[in-house]
Length: 99
Figure 1 (tube, helix red, strand yellow):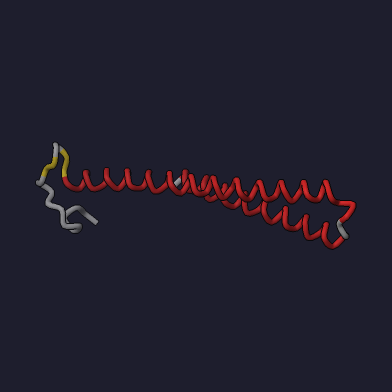
Figure 2 (figure 1 turned 90 degrees about the vertical axis):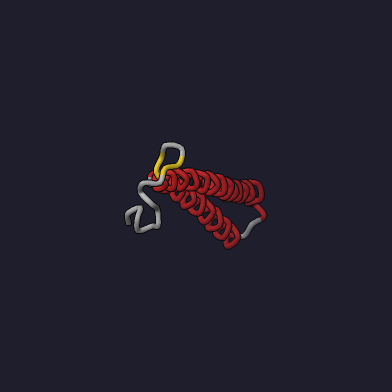
């Protein structure tokens, strides 16, 4: 879509830039801000999942003698689930940075 199709007048200038280039510069800034906020949110989610997985591992390590086999298997599955969720959040963040 060209600048004229968007409603910009190609000859219009703002501070030495065309309206279209100013529009694209503001979109770049908006995308960077949006990505930064999303990265921060993903960092928090990843840390939460990893700390939950570590807590589950510690719980199993400390209290394994009191846990039944079923509880141990459930704990292992819960730890694996949280580690996979943390990895998925990390991959999402990496993909966002590459695009």
